Image (cartoon, rainbow, N blue to C red; front, side, top):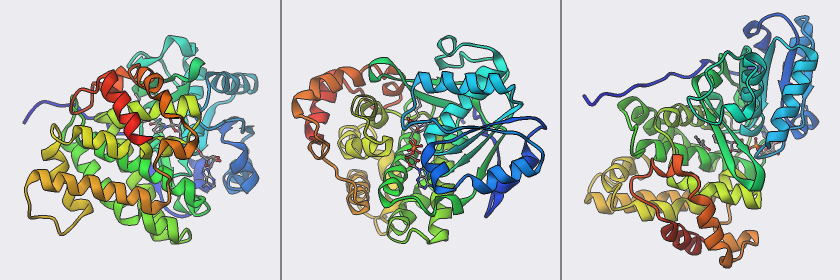
Length: 381
Ligand SMILES: NC(=O)c1ccc[n+]([C@@H]2O[C@H](COP(=O)([O-])OP(=O)(O)OC[C@H]3O[C@@H](n4cnc5c(N)ncnc54)[C@H](O)[C@@H]3O)[C@@H](O)[C@H]2O)c1
Ligand SMILES: CCCCCCO
């Protein structure tokens, strides 16, 4: 067997109503509860917050997280937690609040500054106790040691280090039932991209990530459209949440690549939702990769197109790409850059920005040059 390492994620607690058991997972003392205003307004945090208060804990609410959170938001969350001398942190929401919560727990616990810890395995300090509760399905952020922050000029930077791994992830699909169709679709596609890119990750692909990615892709591809069309279908919602978590565990160890690298500038510069950015670039990057990743794509094809055991690897790879593209379209996501007011003349700038994501591009099955990226953005326009 080729040598590899694998880091398991947080301990997992799953099932209805589990988000109300947070008090059992946290030490005594004030809790920094990181979420966003919309979730507060929807009442989604109420049961969890009330349970913490009933347990005798002060809940210090930080609900200022925006989509694709900024450095400033992280620093404000840290200031809030430091002022209240919190003993633990809860991240409750989609990837945006969870990423802020991870960094707040780390920076409060270690005393490091954010600018000291960007990159892979730079953060080596201690963090505060941390529990993550995802409400989208999803980034899988609750499973990863990663936080992605949008910095000056729209450049997305990441902290990717084991201390950011939460103590617990709590999967409570009831929290995702109210996801609007557009968010269900975008976050579901993001999870599918995590699974596919982990399976073809050039440097760190490994048997455990492969197994997680395959099961994630099965759960996600079988349930995405049901979750979109039947939002109250709890079985579909559970499958999506578990699939997103497994995909997060997969890419934590076999990192994402070209689709994400080209998606980031669309989020950073145009504030497109993260999942939409991935959906826009998915078909084009997979087609670019098709020759280099043909065998791996062919191995994944029967998961999303069950009757395709026959046919050569090239044909099955094409079936995978076409089926995923069909899922994006049927989920209702508009799939052209022009649909979001982006001018084709921006392709060179977007390509230059994508090239900054070298830590992602090195995981792609084949090279993506700046010219390739420009061409892919033009194809996506
Ligand atoms: N750390 C990681 O491993 C990782 C992985 C992928 C993406 N990300 C990051 O995650 C962010 C995107 O996260 P996201 O796609 O989950 O979206 P998000 O957290 O930005 O939320 C998107 C919108 O959906 C709303 N929402 C969330 N849950 C809801 C619910 N249950 N019902 C109704 N509305 C709900 C939010 O209020 C928000 O308005 C990006 O910053 C991306 O870079 C991180
Ligand atoms: C190191 C960057 C990892 C990216 C996570 C998916 O958005």
